[in-house]
Amino acid sequence: MKEFDPEDVETRVTDRLVKTAVSPRPIAWVSTTGENGVDNLAPFSSYNYVGSRQPIVTVHTSRREGGDLKDTARNAIDTGEFAVNVVTEATLEPMDRTAEGLPPSESEFDFADVPRAECRTIDPPRVANAAVTMECTLHDSIEIYDRVMLLGDVTYFHVAESVTTDGEIDARKLDTVGRLGGPYYTVSEPMEFEREY
Image 1 (cartoon, rainbow, N blue to C red):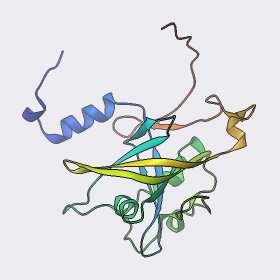
Image 2 (image 1 turned 120 degrees about the horizontal axis):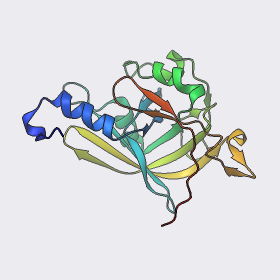
Image 3 (image 1 turned 180 degrees about the horizontal axis):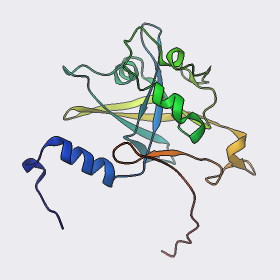
Image 4 (image 1 turned 60 degrees about the vertical axis):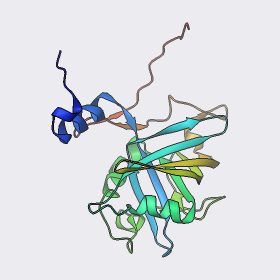
């Protein structure tokens, strides 16, 4: 078995190891609106939930070279609002196009031709054809080394009827895309397993 101290290897080694070992990682396709009125849309594969009874999600982003906040983090912190759109196989390619590093004056919605829809409780738009969207208000932001953690209180849910059964969301119908290590992605395929403990 290979063993090493992270301090003894290049950053790219630990980066690849963590991103491959912690997988599949769900992708948050986050929409925000800047104080300049421009709608931003960007994917983050460092994302999860903190609580479900009082629903709260967390999205983590790096900084730009030079230390400035990326548009998503800056917009969420400045306005206190963002939406998390769930990435499915049907939205994989447009999601990838929105990873383009555009200036704050340009919208990834327009660049990637992603249709918008209005949110109910926040100003930023949501992805109109996302199977699930969670509207969020900023609970907190935390600086961790070179990264920023955004914590969002979920204030509203949008769930497409196509991914429900008897009115409830159905994992068998929601083909979420996960990020693996390197250039690899995966589409979820539910496996039945009866928990005994």
